[in-house]
Length: 520
Ligand code: ME8
Image (cartoon, rainbow, N blue to C red; front, side, top):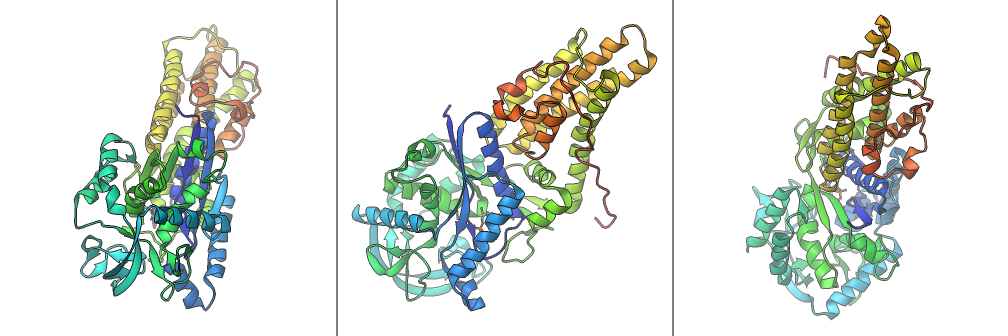
């Protein structure tokens, strides 16, 4: 297993404020970064903003301002929102950074010198939303499928990257590496695109300055700027110091891109072909997420029904929101966001299952064991089953995270919490304490000891998913520094690691139940 891990989010267009869909992808990348860090891997997490292109120029024109000031405003909005939420990114890259522009020009020149770029005349239907010429497959009823607007017929001389020369290699690579693009249906979709001769061709990588001058100038023709996607994808290299930064190769070999399904083609077709032309291997994984809809409609800036992640954080707490986002949407599928569904999840899983386990375990530890982890009496098959389940859960979580299936990892973690709740019900230490039969103290101590050990495992496993809550739980368990030295998954599988005598604290409910309003 590689000891490095490099994860990226898409870089966000700076034409509107961040919404729930962006927060979802970034939460996923953040969770992966946190997990791999806790697994002891040297981790680098890159996010940022995509600032060139027609969309930004259009906003600037409509506001009577410059594209740079629009880019500054929204780039700051994204960075500040991600900081307020507490995402653990190592760098927030901007495609207007001079260093990034230099790297793009170096790559363009290199590919041009290698004979991979050609000047041609082209006529076609151009969509400003997509920032490219459309093919038949991109349209429905004369309109762009994604942007629901009519493309414009345009004729232009432009530079083309000879992308189609790499298609055979790309199809073979996808066949040979079934987990390059996940989940599998997106890999199949890409194989379908590559098989369909009419669908893809070479990639137009320039825009004449007469039409658009907000972009990186082509180093070999100052009348043109670079197509925004060609510029944007290269951020994944600039961000880790391409071409000669000391960590570049180590991180590139472990690169994992998290993207939404609407940007599959640029990442699954353009990007690997560009990388091959640059002389680099493809990324290790492309993780493709589905979409959050709101009342059945795509949640997007252009449709204007964006849901603000900060407003939701304010009302529900970001841990609860990210738990819902990662748990409710099976990775790769779409899901509908409703507040009622969010509240149901918070109540069922966070309040009634995990929260209840935490409060009853710590309350009983205070009451029956003087507020310290008790010395256990003899253990039996029930305790061994819980210990065994904690170990199995740790292994399942590791496997699920490495497969980018966070919903499954969370399902396993909450199944462990549920099993410990059932164990408590069956043992009923409160009854034993009330009846005070012979040896009752030892029996209660064994049960609480077992629950405390399980809580420790749960807190460690939850740390990448609930980064605000897990440290609180560890503190209540008397091991506030546990995350500093923890190694996942092995440390979460270790039983008996919480020493008898460790002082615990009761604390307030981790996730109070939320009352659902009738209108929901
Ligand atoms: O596409 N649910 O930027 P962007 C889930 N600049 N994900 C969603 C979503 C939703 N409702 N709405 C948007 C771009 N997204 C380019 C990327 S990368 C080199 C360049 C996701 O700001 C969308 O799928 O329009 C995409 O992955 C990301 O948000 C950024 O969208």
